[in-house]
Amino acid sequence: MSEAPIFEVDETVDDTGPAPVVAVVGRPNVGKSTLVNRIIGRRQAVVEDVPGVTRDRVPYDAQWNGRRFTVVDTGGWEPDAKDRAAAIANQAEIAVQTADVVVFVVDVTVGPTDVDEAAVKMLRRSHKPVILVANKADNQSLEMEAVSLWSLGLGEPHPISALHGRGSGDLLDDILNALPTPPPIVEGGPRGPRRVALVGRPNVGKSSLLNRVSKEERAVVDSVAGTTVDPVDSLVEMDGELWQFVDTAGLRKRVNQASGTEYYASLRTAGAVEAAEVAVVLLDSAEVISEQDQRVLTQVVDAGRALVIAFNKWDLVDADRRIFLDKEIDRELKRIPWAIRVNISAKTGRAVDKLAPALRKALASWEQRVPTGALNQWLTTLTQATPHPVRGGRAPRILFATQAGVAPPRFVLFTTGPLDAGYQRFIERKLREEFGFEGSPIEVSVKPRKKTGPGGRGKAHG
Image (cartoon, rainbow, N blue to C red; front, top):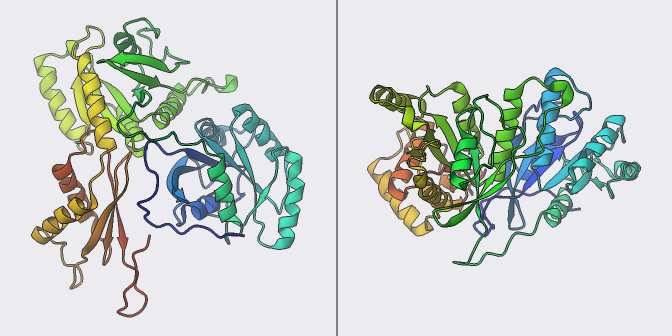
């Protein structure tokens, strides 16, 4: 059986467009996070021998055989869960809804349980491809126990040991086979409509803006917050180009959990952002930037999507409010100074025509690639002019840099040792000053050189 991958930067990986999504689900304590760590090749997901450690959907970048994808760790799913357990189960269900492939993990040492069978019913309703994993098959005799899992009706079980790596390579091959075929890349050729998530807290004017750009009444507009319950994808022509405004229809509230509308709005936002390439975050320019606004912005940034902030209701802003708003932006949006901002009025149509150029600019930054030669030439000049501060009598050096991917741009610095967080932020800031990336998050990670012995030299590692 093939063993688990070791994470290395591979510039041959296909990194065009959003990565397909693989959701890892199952009842509590079957080893989901251990499997996620095995897939991504590093210990990043929290693992503890106690049910309920993972509570939210947590995405990680992964790659195998030249194909990159996103693997999503989830909390334990249980039917009829209550309170916090219900929230955890809902997060797992939203992961299933937004995934391309679902990996369903069962503990082979326990065999199929009632909870596993209930989970199978939930998975069948999703109509997503499901790969059944018989985890904790640490030896050959336990592998034979996987035969009992045929009773779940999900096809052939994949016996693996997430802890020891048995069978993980074969599993990854099967995951890649189940992923949707990537579309052919035609340089300079036509492509489908760019996918845009229109998000924001309730009653900021999302439906009004959609009606304005589509030039027809496609969404119900009401002054009552939360009017839009079941939005659908809309094809809209802006500035001579077709755009697809995406949302997550079908994520409806359960009858016995009618309260908590903000929680469900958050799930809808997350689903829309994950399905999109760029997000338009709508803020009410006549009101202060709220904590809820900040949460929506954080969802977009954490998802790694291109970002345009549209300050709506600009027709209601007077001179005094503009002064206060400038100060608010400096204070509340200082962590995302790279976001593109436009001031619009969905009601009057003011400056709505600036939206399409802003989206194009953000997407161009999101897909921008810096040639390796130009990147390292610039970096050498920068670090010679401003070297890393000396710590403990020596300063780490950056040996080499590469751009590991796009959408969003991801950079890896190979170094002689760990970098100060402040110096890493300095490099990111200078990277933006030199190469732009307006409207797109960028990721800068560090891979210190691994020493093979006292005073020895070795390769960089993750």
